[in-house]
Length: 230
View 1 (cartoon, rainbow, N blue to C red):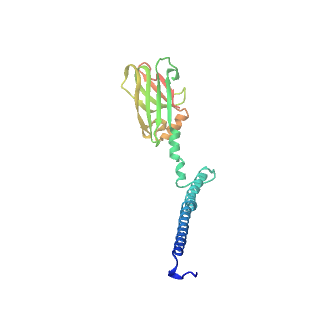
View 2 (view 1 turned 180 degrees about the vertical axis):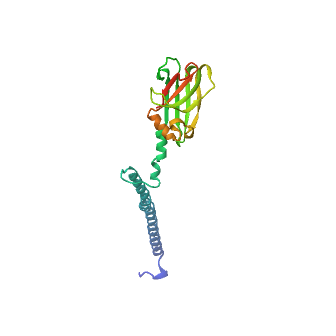
View 3 (view 1 turned 90 degrees about the vertical axis):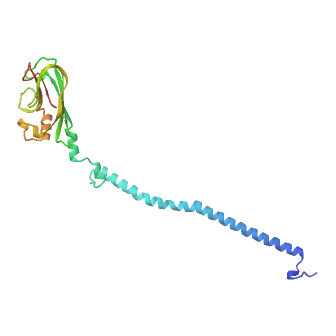
């Protein structure tokens, strides 16, 4: 029997057509799902990897600049400017650090001639950071009748002119232990051979062993304890 064409298909033929259409739809849907999954994989894996060269290209100039500055700072023959030059201490800072602190240990044995006494003392001189002044602290132990304390120009064993009076009275009649005097002085206060000189000149004389402190008492007006500043 010849099958009927078109709309005169039998029910079984209609069912077969529906099944084929559904199968095609399922196949198309599966293709769409696979395409979406592939697109997601490309986005997650491939695209983030493609950003890496951009990151490295933006950071590498900074690293290169840092390496250049470091190399310039470490290279003996290179010159530095800008930020790298700030790491180099200035001349004024180096001078201030070089001046630093000086001191003298005071005793009767250092007097000329030497004296036997239980008194002793310490003088500390600290140069200001700008090199314009000097702070001083004079401490003594068991000294009686202290009258004066003066800085002199002169080497050990010799006597010299007064360049600055650190303590000029009143006389301490009792036995005293502690800080006699403290304060600061500038170059304008220097006298004797250092009059008109600078603090740098004073420091140079201290380093040369040409400055001493002499402490006088009622019993020994010319000096009971003495020490070279170094």
